[in-house]
Length: 171
Image (cartoon, rainbow, N blue to C red; front, side, top):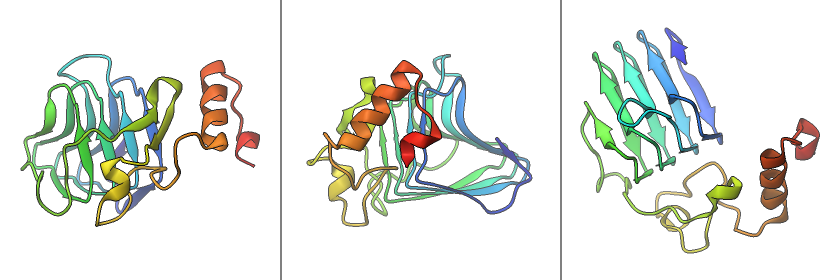
């Protein structure tokens, strides 16, 4: 949640299975979401959203994969604005955009299956033939440049599922 914050940058972050909203920017705040993967946000259909931009806030979304969320991919309300480039919005249950223009088909914005390696095991890397890896505007998602079967990704996913993940796992 970012209220009245200016120029926050979220870079190479995976946000999976957030309770209600993945990222919420309000009250005139501004943020850049770059190379993020947001998946499975929301427990309440049509009342959950991956990204909410409201109250005069603004967001820049670049090279993100926003997929499989309950509710909208992006919901603009109360004067919220968003600028989207080179990103993939796919299978968000209420639609990809609400309250703001849908940029799909422009500036590298697509609506195609991102072909995650194994989201059930929390492996959100993109398969070799993923449109997010083959995009002419750059690789999309938090870990779009690493292939499926990468030992690091598989090991981290197993640790997260078992609840044994620690910061030492990243060393």
